[in-house]
Length: 348
Image 1 (cartoon, rainbow, N blue to C red):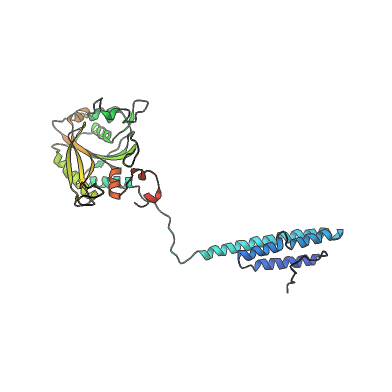
Image 2: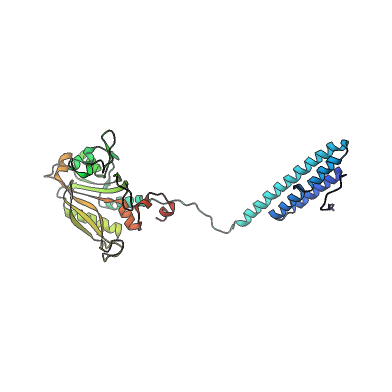
């Protein structure tokens, strides 16, 4: 049976046997601690400022000189052994608590795999839809020459879009493309009709960022050049795209407009896919959602790339990817697409 020591100080004549018995009792009490609170109480009892270790140090101070060495060794052994027992028991209790807190019957928690960005989703869907109509994807550089970005697209030298306030010019005379139309020019320079391409990509304009504008944005532009291409072809293809992207009952309308690179030029709208054209908050009660511009390719553009405008006609169109994403997904502010807040992006 283990000896029971009183709560007060032991006598000053504690011998080596009593120290060893006290060490055995301390380790046993620590091993029997049922929780961290009981363990801490045992630690304070034996190793605290007023703990039993002080009895040993008092006995060491009062011991005869010939016993001090042995008692000193036992005192160090007591402290080290009891502290080791405390550490071992604490680790065991913490490990047991961790296991107890985990319900092994629950299904595993798989890490979040992420989703495609809304802008990427719209681009991929547009590529898929126009691919069904025979369009292939074309790409070009983000840094362009004024010829490809403006001159070849029949944009006059005094056009507002060429002003440094509306275009990012670089020091070597090049610029960040303001639309993906330069891709159309590069494709026409490299091949003869028929041409049927779409050009999705990033564009840049020094716009002040707000809920609907960003200095960085994306477009999907299309070009179809062949013999006898007309506005009827344009309307038919855009109607197919609208119904595939927005829903089977969506209609399309053209409104007269002006663009330097098309003649005639139009802006086109989709009927609101939310209210069916009756008027709602999304379409601002108009029943229509403005998408972008289009038209028949101007003969001057064909001249710049070496096409014979007496033999070929074509149409071109463009649309903002972010705008379609905001309409389809109900995103009220374009900045939400670029803040990289995963709480927003993982919803899509």
